Image (tube, rainbow, N blue to C red; front, side):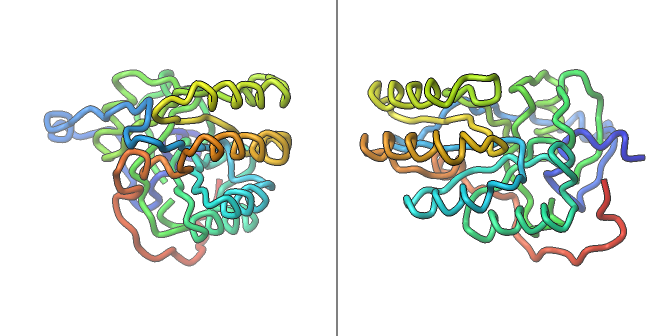
Length: 243
């Protein structure tokens, strides 16, 4: 049944687990919750809810500015992750050197869910070390599940507001004010599914942050950690690649 594909489905394609065993629960280590970067002078621009149409434009913008983005992908939010187009988008971002991570399967509030299946190594060969719960909501169950799967939970310390209707002009003002405050590090939340984010707000944000001397890096780099638990070869498509 695909109805339960809501918990970390984009994280690891071949590591399938249902409810944790008693042994796992006894040995569990609750996942760390990351709300800020730790490497000084870094800014991590993160993008939720893809893969989406604009990922090619966004990647080109980032690469032109010597920036690495972090993409928290869904399995089945704005289209099925296994579609031909979305597989190409995920592989493109990964092959361009951006960090990919999980934003769950269907973008449901994880604090309302029970244990579920996992599913992204199929597409890229990489097992992400990080996930982001939708809406930034988590409880002990979410942290336990992430801990068993050896993933850290990533939130943010700056929200552009693009997902809640903040106008592009006001988003750019937020970025200007943030850059002028000049915190030691920045962990910024954005969404790649909005054209205004990609074509209007991001060029401004990147200019503002670079002008203040920030290095625009992945979440892993801003933490001084590895982005993946393991890296291998992508799989060939099979009949199991469905939503």
